[in-house]
Length: 223
Image (cartoon, rainbow, N blue to C red; front, side, top):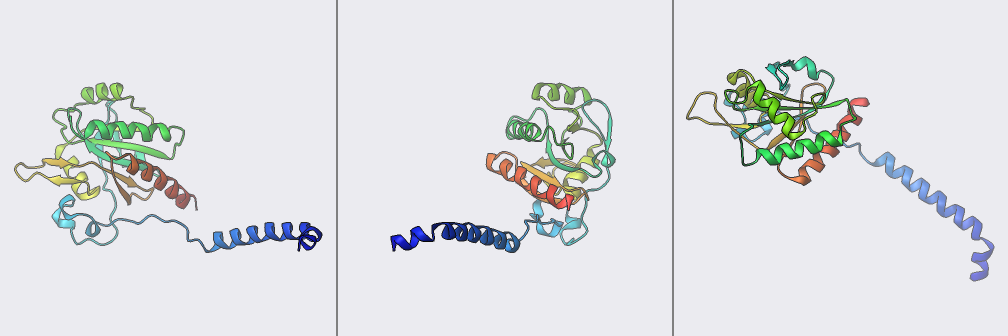
């Protein structure tokens, strides 16, 4: 037996290498390409969605908007054209989940700082407090990169509608008009303004999943 292996050693090694290559090639052909879902209002927790959209099952996209960022610049949907972006809702004086969420958004910013295809967008839910000057102060304190991340303020109803009718990411506070109970949700939006993922902005494992999904989405976009 040893003599047989010695005689055909080279042949067996080549056969083994070829087998590995063939098996790998077959696996890669058969393995399905990872594709993220496209979320519709009817698939999301009803508490986070305006009642007019509870039964909407297709064609949902982020609505047009016009808000002011931390530098007093007008930010619209055009600034996010052909971009993948991560959106959330916060307020600068929040002492509960917001500091953790902002810290994780900073991590995302740093992980993708050289990737011009991905941007960030944070909306204040207290525009009456979070003026442009307040947002600028907060941005400096937290290390916000103005080229990549807009903190925006503006008309309260518009922000309310964006949260509940576009991003499907905040609870209604029924005791007062246009008041929101913001959540820990980070929302992944693709280049066609569709929602492709929801993530708990307070959980490190969800931030890892978000970064993975951004890579998946970039592959889909490039194809």
